[in-house]
Structures are given as structure tokens and as C-alpha cells.
Image (cartoon, rainbow, N blue to C red; front, side):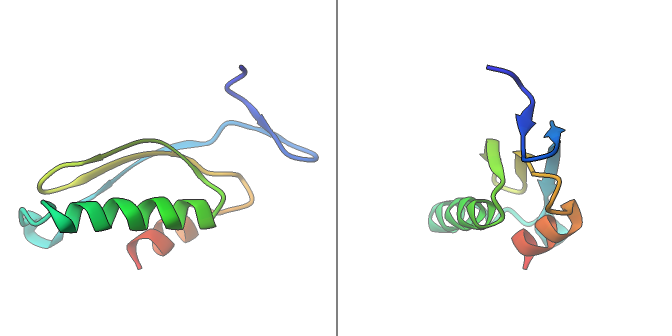
Amino acid sequence: MSRFKKLSQTIWHCQYHIVFVPKYRFEILIGEVAIETERCIRAFAEQQEAEIIELSIQIDHVHLLVSVPPKVSISNFVGTLKG
């Protein structure tokens, strides 16, 4: 399988490594909070037609490797996730 994806008139490969950190890097991403965070990230990524390649939720931060189509700007994507 090719790493490039196709739309009607474009061939693209846009991957972004995004790191979210709670305010003051508090260690709050455990238990139900971590599960709900993962659920929300997956739902919003699906809504934006993005593909999550890797998602790792640590106690004090979230690593996200995501493939975002070029029709969605990365600032809108991150704004949707953080909002």
C-alpha cells in the first residue's frame, strides 16, 4: 500500500505530530478522564475525516500522530480537538 493518499485532483501525504499538555502539566489524564479524552479525540478526528495513526495518552500529556487531508487546515483541526 502506498503511503500517499488520493483525492479527486490531488495526491497527498500530510502527517502531523501533535502534543497536548494540560495546564501546568497536572497529572490528570488517568482512569475515566483518559478514556473520555481518547473517545473525544477519535470522534472529532473522524468528524474531520482525519486518520489517527498513533494515539498515546500519558498521565500529563497526549501524543497524537494524525494524517489530515489537505482540505482541512491543521489550525482548524487542532482548534476542534482542543475546543
